[in-house]
Every structure is written in structure tokens, then in C-alpha cells.
Image 1 (cartoon, rainbow, N blue to C red):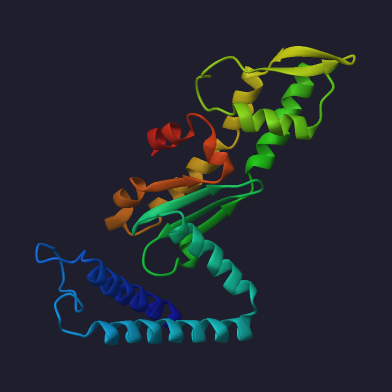
Image 2 (cartoon, helix red, strand yellow):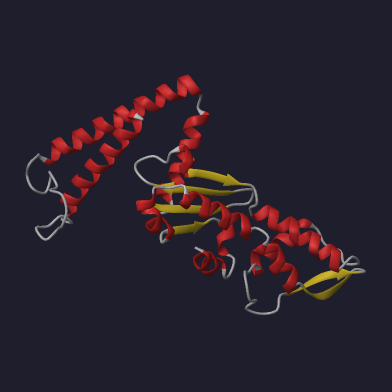
Amino acid sequence: LLGSVFIQIGTNLANDYSDARRGADTSDRLGPVRVTSSGLVAPQRVLVATWIAFGIAVACGIYLAVVAGVVILATAGYYGYLAYGLGVRQNGMGMEIGAGTVDFCIRHGAVPGENDQRTIFTGGDYIDQQLESFLRERYPSSAFNLNMVRRFQEKYSFIGDAPAAVQVDIPVDGKPTRHDITNEMRRACESILSGLIETTVEMIAGFDPEFQDRIRNNVILAGGGSQSRGLREYVESRL
């Protein structure tokens, strides 16, 4: 908790200092007084205070690493990336669809709390496995492997209505043969949707009611799996 407080203090001071140096804080600015641009505190003192605050936060992190192990720092760092590295604004949510997992993180304050983070295990690999299963069911005589299926999915994945028929060449008895895999592609890509929406809705519903609408309107999708055509529109329509 102490480390989180000083991260927030350091971040605010850094913003105050950098905005004043860039000329972003003018007399037309609305909101609380900025100590650097208003001349209340000299810029050098604000900078020193920034480093002191971050130094205390680092000391708290080192203490946690000694007591609880470095895993806690790796976990905090990763969810910090989700909250800040994806460009999620305050009171927003980052959703990263990776190969093995889908990771969710709500940004509210300096460091995400335990209830602001969630991981489910239906990422891109799950879609590939589903697609392979569907194709083997429909085309039992065709010769293909998971790597081929993964390339199909990366190139043609979509949600909802297909932008065009998905047709690929797959060997049959050693000869390249055209296969229509549109329906199988749709079924595989949409197999993760219920988990995505259910987790997102649960996290938003469990958050402070005052900020739920802001979070719902600020969901950032990232990761390779987020590139599926129609996914962003689907998530927006369900929230």
C-alpha cells in the first residue's frame, strides 16, 4: 500500500513537472493548481521530490521481493503494463488476448488491486485447437497440422459475418485442394466470446458503481487475438 501511494505521488509530480516544461499548463487550464507552472515550487525541487517518491516506491518493492519473492514483482509489472502500457486511461480496462491466456486489468489509481485483475485460459491457442478439431470433423481425408491451422486463423479470423468466403488450399492425397472453411473459422473464433464478455461484465459489475460507465466506455483490446475482424464491434455491442 505504501509503495502504491508513492508511485501515485511520483507520477503526479512527474506530470506536473513535465507539463510545465512543455508549456502544457497555461492560464486557461481547468482544474487544481499545478505547483510548477504556478511558481509555488521551483521546478528543480519538484523533480527532486519526484525521484524521492519513486525511490521510496522502489524500496517498498525490494522489501516485497525479499519477503514474498520476485514473482510478486513480475506479476505487478505485467498487470502494470496492461494498465499503463496499453494506453488505458484512468477508469478504463485493458484486455490482452494472447496465445495462451486472455488477461484483464482495470486501471483505477496507481497500481491495480487484486480484484482489478483477471486471467482466463482461452486465448489464441484455444481457437487454433478448436479450428483444427472442426476441420478434422468436416474434412477427415485432408492432410494438415496445427501449424497450418494457426496460419489460417491468423490470416482469416473473424467474428460475425464473414467479409468473404474463407478458402484455403489443403493437401488431399498429396494434391493441393481448395477447401471452404468459413463456417469452421467462425465457430472457432467465436468460441472464446462468452468467456470474454462474461469476465468483462463481472469485473465491471464488481467495481465502484460511480465509475462503471467510464470503464465500460474505455475498454482497450490488445494482443494478437484482438485482430480478429469484427471483434471490437462485437465487444462494444455487448457492453
